[in-house]
Length: 420
Ligand code: GLC
Image (cartoon, rainbow, N blue to C red; front, side, top):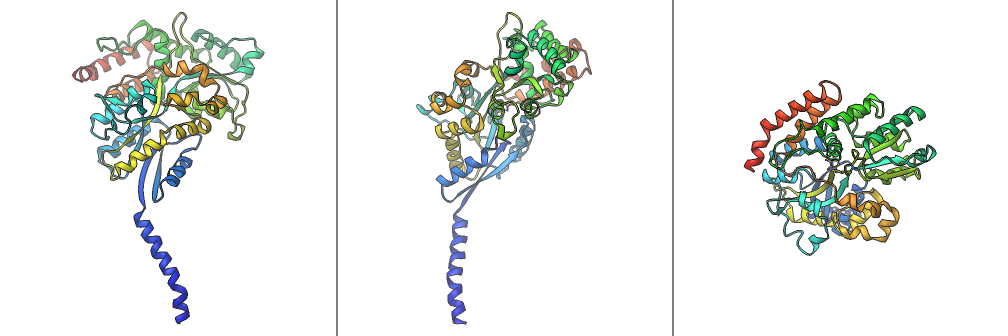
């Protein structure tokens, strides 16, 4: 009996020590959209290694920005304390800050550190002179093309929408594959894709006086380009159900000639281990424009914010600083293909070696245009998503559809904007 007790004592002591350590362990939760390159868990492990006694729980959200937005609004409006860090789309900081859901981060990211961040993402994270999120990675819409197919057909990379449509339609028929794939599902991605066409045809969503401009000839031209894509089979109708990953999978499996996507798709397209059938055959270029106009990319990107309801705000801020540090951004650029928000990372030799296009397209990346920075942007976007999808699926003719969008926006959002 005495021998048994002797044997059991060390085990009891070990169990007690473990339970004490557990009770000292701090846990924070990070809500973040699914990463196609699957890097989030590795980042967490590195943070935990540097912070013994800290555990970060990953709450993986759906890929779609719109679905994430709806879920976060539900959590935050209820004052949910179970999530400490949110990764938020560049279009939400104003809305979330105005609702009082985030902690200010002016001190967490102060000068001169702040000057290393790209001005566009910083501006998107700032509302009423306060920084509400730290830019994590940025995004800009780009054109991907099959360099091998264009080469064989002696075609130059299209820089007008007209040429893109012609080539996509011709090559799609010739190779029995999709021509131009993009993001046309009824969600935020559709708005980005549409704005890029509108802006690159000289149009604007709002005029200087805040009036919506959806009945302009440029808006009609932009919707006309999209309708024509389907008429001449430059794009399959299925595009109207695609988000980023559906179009990316089609392209990297070798079933599409052209694709509009964010820069993350580059790394996957070069990676045979991730199933790419097109490694070494892909090129990237700025998106086309209407004849005589300038190409335009929509500014996207994700940012890290601390919930006002977090029980561990200081630890949450540490996680933000870790994830947005030089080393983490470098790692994400190398292994996840994400565009850094720190200017210095674009000069890193390892990053440039693996992503030579960073140098060529730095200008496109940093001149990408923001969507309106205002608290009611998600409502504006909802109207656009529904109205544009109705037009593109043929439920309503372009002119009528644009007119109702114009009227809806005039009625519902413009006044609020000017009270802002
Ligand atoms: C990307 C962008 C984001 C945009 C979304 C639309 O995730 O980074 O800003 O809203 O795509 O699908």
